[in-house]
Length: 144
Image (cartoon, helix red, strand yellow):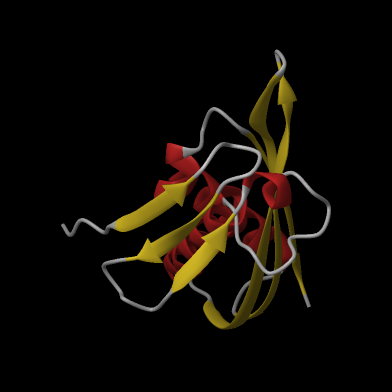
């Protein structure tokens, strides 16, 4: 199985410094990062580890859910997945406290109960969910 790589170059202190994270394996981009913007309500044109985790989780979950729907005898027509990754405080330190997966699906061959079962199985089986198992992950899944 492949290994994927990202690289970050950082200059300065935590509060005054900034950096750039490069998606090295895919070469699709380099993105600004900043701790003050990471902890602000508005991202201001920068990304954050939490946003990158959200991107990884939502895309991995989409693949896992597509697989589970197929195993259950359904055919996914469209899946819309968002992942909300919250940075909070625990023991006085910044900590990823929760992840909320929201799924809306258009699926042939499954009723709402079958879709919910596939969605829960995908949450358990998704490799990124497994990697993030120390975080409380909630799921809101529904057919549209």
